Structure formats: C-alpha cells, structure tokens
Amino acid sequence: MKRTFLSLFLALSLSFSLSAQDKVTQTVLELGRTDNHTMVHADYIARNIGGRLVGTHMLHHAEDWVAEQFRSWGLEVTMQEAVEIGVGFDRGPWSGRMLSEDGMMLHFGTPAYTAGTRGPQKGRVLLEPKSQREFDRVKGALKGSWVLVETGPTNGLAIDASAKADSLRAAQLAEGKEGSVLMYRQMVDAGVLGFIRPAKMPMQVLYNRATCFDITMDNLPKACDIVLDEHQFALIKQKVVDRQDFQLEFDIRNHFFPGPMKYHNILAVIKGSKYPDEYVMMGSHLDAFDIATGSTDDGQGVCVTMEAARLLAAAGAKPKRSIMFCIWTAEEYGLMGSKYFVEKKTIPWNKISNYFNRDGGPLAAVSITVPPVMYDDFAEVCKPLENYNPKIPFSVQKRQGDPQPRPTRAGGSDHAYFAMNGIPAISFRESDVFGYDFNYRDIWHTEDDLYDKLIPEYMEHSAVVQAVTAYGLANLNHLLSREGLYKE
Ligand SMILES: [Zn+2]
Image 1 (cartoon, rainbow, N blue to C red):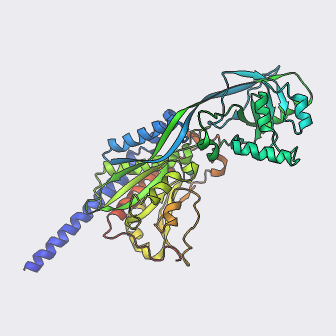
Image 2 (tube, rainbow, N blue to C red):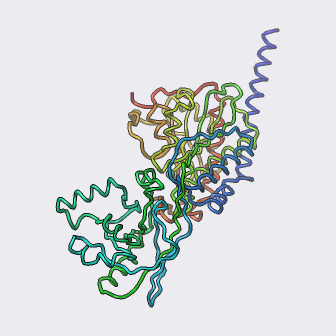
Image 3 (cartoon, helix red, strand yellow):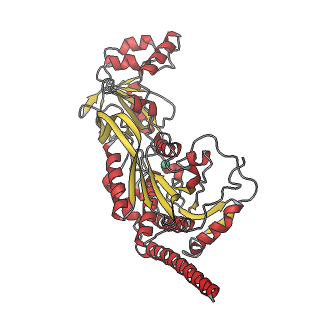
C-alpha cells in the first residue's frame, strides 16, 4: 500500500515536472511566434548605438543598454571587466569632396583610432615620393598636402605609425630598399595632412590592435589615414599625373581622449533551482567594427541571445541548472573577452554542459550535429523544434566517424577558448533555408554590415531554437557527457 502510494506520488511529481517543463517550452514557442522581440533589439542597436569599437564610448552605452535589458527581464547580471585600453577614441561623422569642376563626393573611410582633421581641411594632392631624390623634389610642397600611397588591396588596417615601425622603415631605407618602403616619418615631419590608400569595394576598415593599444596622449597620431574607393583613387591619381590643379577637402571627426577605458563581458543568468552551479551557456559578441553598424557581426547574435533570454524569462522558466547568456567584449581584438572568461575559470570548466556561440551571420539555426553519446539528450530536448516551423524544420544529427582532435589554436569566434579547453562548444548549423542569396563574405567587416542585411525570420526562429534547447539541457538530470567529444 505504502509502495503504491509512493509510486503514485512519484508518477504525479514526474508528470508535474514534465508538464511544467512543457508549459515553459510551449510558452516560449508561442511567444516566439506571436511576440518575438529579436528585431526590436536589432533596431535599437542599429538606430541608437551603431558601431561599437573597443576604445569608444559607444561600446559603454551598448554595455549599459544590454545589462539593463537583462535586468528588466529579471535576470541576474554580472559585468566582468575583461579589457582595458589606455586612450579612448570616438568616431564622429566624416565627409570629403574634390574641389574642382566636378565636385565629386569622396567615398572613403578611416580607422577611428587614427588622426582626424581640424575641421574641414583642403589640400593639394601629391604622389608618394619613392626615393630620397623624389622626396627632396616635393619636400616643400608636402606641408598641407594629401599624399596618394599605392598599396595592394587594403583591408583598412591603419598604417603602422609606431616608433618601432618607424625604425624598421629607417633601417630598410638605410639598406637601400628605396621604392618599396613608405617614407612615413619623413612625410609626417614635413607636415602632410594625411595619406590616402585605395580600397576594394565593399570597403573594410579594421582594427590594428598594436596601434590601438599602444596609443598614449603624448604620441597621438598626427596624419590622417584614409582608405578611398579604388575607382576614385585611380581617377584622382590620373589628375595628379596630368598635373591638373585641384584640391581635396576632408572633414574627419576622430577624437581621442584620456582613458583608461574598461570593457566588460555581460553575464546574465537564470538561476538553476536544483544545480545552480552547473551551466548551459550561450553567447555572442557586442563589440563591432564601426564604419557600419555591426548589425550582422555580431549585432544579430547579440539580439538572438538576448531574445532567447527574454523568451525564457517571459515564460517563467525555472530550470534545474543555470542558464548563462554571455555578451562578450573585444572579440574583434582577438577574442579577448571570452578568453578572459574561460582562462579565469569564471565557471569551473567541468560545470559547463555546452556553450552555444552565435556569430556567423543572420541565418536560421536548422540542425545540430552531436557526438553519439549526446544524441539521445539532444533528440529529446530538441523534439519540440522539429515541426515548430514547418518551413524551417529542425533536426538533430549523430556525428558520423571519429571525433576531431581538440583545437590547439584560437580562431573563428568566442567558442574557441571553450573548445581548446575541452568544454563542449557545439554550435547550431545555420542556413539560408529560403535561398535569399545570402553571402556573409560580402558584408563581413565591411561598410555594408547594416540593419538592412538582417533576415528577421531566420533570427527570430533562431532565438526560439536557442531558448528551447538551452532550457531542455538545463532540465536534464545530468550534464552532457564529454565522452568522444574530441579525439584525445
Ligand atoms: Zn563576429
């Protein structure tokens, strides 16, 4: 009798916990369809924040906004200081034009941590002198001029203006390598306004960690560092070769200020009820290049991660183990935020079930491939997703063949340091299911990384996939097994 009662009790409590779980999942699925905020977050990022480089105030604004959103949904938020940079810089608007009969507007960019102008500045244009003799011929004219520097295709990395680079160039010149060495310091000392290099389209303007982190208020860059649409570059060069009389005017508002500027990983948690010290994790990076709005890299990932959190909070999720939503800093400067998190053992490595990274464009999460030992867990947890959206079916695949060796070098994105340290960091496979001719390479790190490139239906769907999967894993009675994860 007693035993019957006990088993009845067990059956009841099991069905209660199952139905409570189903209820949360059902609510997430329903809200994901009817009240999905993924694009609300994306709109805010593009409209009110924009580019978010480490070193800028905008990244601080972005951090504050993300943290406040998580708090408003009831999550516990920790700001983990992970990066410090000595001198800060902010980018204002930039414009340029050719002052001649055609008045052409110039299509260009500059790294934000290179010199701005003193308001609009006009100057004539010279070709880079390639020898001491050529230098001597123009040395009086260099002051107040823009100099065309013909490089190969540039990805917009700043010209290295460090003292170290100067002495390297001086040594090369002394060795007689004239012609292949930029006479950078000589031209800066002669008073050039700046350098102009040709850029392939779509334009990239990237960071240069050495340059950014080595700036002090005493050695601020002096000469502008412009990358110009290669077609305009060719046209302007021809005018110079023809010795036509014309000027270019640039107005570049890159502003430096004393730091230190500190940046944070934003760690938001839905606390586990039974295994609070164990975690299912997901994340994306908040910092972004800034000649566009960083909407796809990685604004979309941030929005999806945030929305997964909001959906779960709105559904009243109280999982057994904790779910952590990580909004990383300084990914573009070498995965600095996630590296710090992992290496500091912020969460003990053996307490992480899986880390899901999202940083590969605004595509739809359509499947996940897992080691055989994880298959049953994932199949159960992801079951509600199978037919959630009949147009974007979801599947769990068992990995075929042997595991790969554990990665030994960091690269790619914020999953790297997890994987290198043996922590499961399996990501969803993402796909352009409807065939929108999406090509991330056209956008990635370019001036086209804009809100218009986002694909709402894919992102909204992915937020639901991430929420349901993380919640299901957090409710298992065990952490995911690591057996056969890597070839050891
Ligand atoms: Zn990225």
